[in-house]
Length: 114
Length: 116
Image 1 (tube, rainbow over the protein chains, first blue to last red):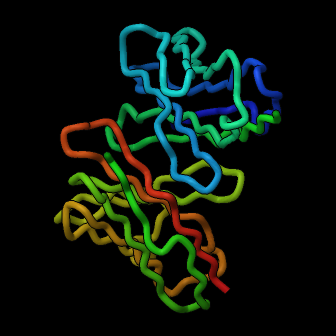
Image 2 (image 1 turned 30 degrees about the horizontal axis):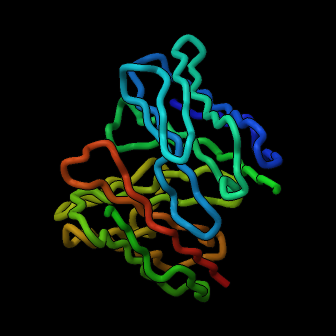
């Protein structure tokens, strides 16, 4: 079965530090990959997505992610975090067998301190 | 655009009773809506896919007679938890897929259900 692993469960950073959140998936075929963010008390929002083409994807709020097919990875990065980036981050992959089904990782809680 | 609402945001009910959760797409039409369940510190697990005007498709292990889903219009889907038990306490999140944007799902804020 397809799965998504997020290795960092809780990350604590100071403002201006660089961020990289790991995401690995278990499927060797064509995938669509997503990063969602959930700010405290708010709904899930799409940060960025990868369907095809340039493996370096830029999203909103200065986030980017790189799809590395050989490593089955789709890590999220931001060069300089802000306090407002404090949130829960979820990586997700769209099932190749079910075009509707999104498979989510367990999430990474990011806390940024001023 | 692409706003999804859920009502209620928080509900407490007694064991054995039923509770209905609504999911609405406020500014777009959604032929497909999805219901997820999220346990603390865990991932979102898809429960079922709801298509307007037809029966929902449930994921393996989800009791369709316990979690009744109705998608009567292009902007409304409901999830009814019947004969609720304390183990049904969870965070329920819906999402909606905008017609014409085939791969994007827009998420509601979630509903916290507590069964006492």
